[in-house]
Image (cartoon, rainbow, N blue to C red):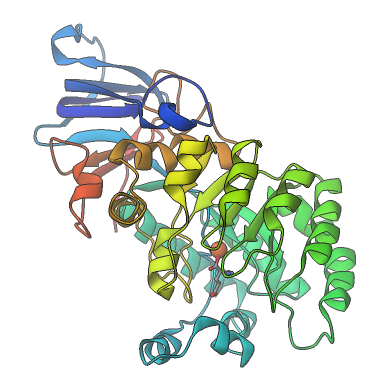
Length: 405
Ligand code: NIG
Ligand code: FE
């Protein structure tokens, strides 16, 4: 069956227009059709409109009853660390007792404890884990996801991670500069190895490169060296920046023409205005700030100043064990003071832009990929309003109903 019709929807909601990324007031402009239908054909959206304007459809059409539901674009998670082995539940309990993320990291725990578990896992186990995490994401409405390596930090495990992510249907990013592994005396010595021995193969498997710019990870000079080499190898650039302290990640992102700088919990007004005047997207991760009990990023200032703001989960075992973009949208409304419309645009159109997929993903409009979430409410804003609810009645992926596990 190549055609699928979703009929009698309470609402169909999509970011308006065709532009990407959306900035300023345009981020808040949603097109909402009441009593709507949506027609998919050959994996793309063929038409949307009011039920009363739906003409006769000849030939084979699979029908889905949309009564009581609303349709939104499939959600796009543009920042995850979904490929890992093991967990950090012990560390979580220690943090609940007062230990900080930075203390655990400095003591050889944190990221490095997941590195140990991931190095010990065969590639098949990494694939199975990543697919399981993808299924969790899909259950929450994520139809497109990016995932980073960065828990191998040796050649074989980094490449195995990138392959496991692709095998699970994700878009791989090489986070070759996530932490300095213990077998290297300095960050520079590790980068010598990573750029000479891993980058040539990583560049064949990944679409982007990422670096963690922070005290105890990589400084701006090291990040510049890593990212410049990755850019020369054809990769798009991303940065983890201003998570705990401002180190100059925003200025470096602008200098190098990066796609995005992500986190920004510590960003001040200078950084906000620099980003707003640039083509670098600001990817905000409020579930991570919540999970670590950190300040929220300056989302309202970024949107109002005109920055290209996207939202993502940062799903990972240490700083954000949360795969749900609906939860992120709830946090965006309650903590970041973004409207439900701004939140939806930030994790659809703008997230697709960060992944280089604007024009294909993130809208319910003719020609876009037929990735659709059917929300279990006739007002689509329940996605953000109903905190922690299981919102997803069904998902259409590439024009077909997906099996939710
Ligand atoms: O985005 N801050 C750096 N990296 C991840 C956390 C990874 C981990 O704790 O395992 C982040 O929060
Ligand atoms: Fe991250």
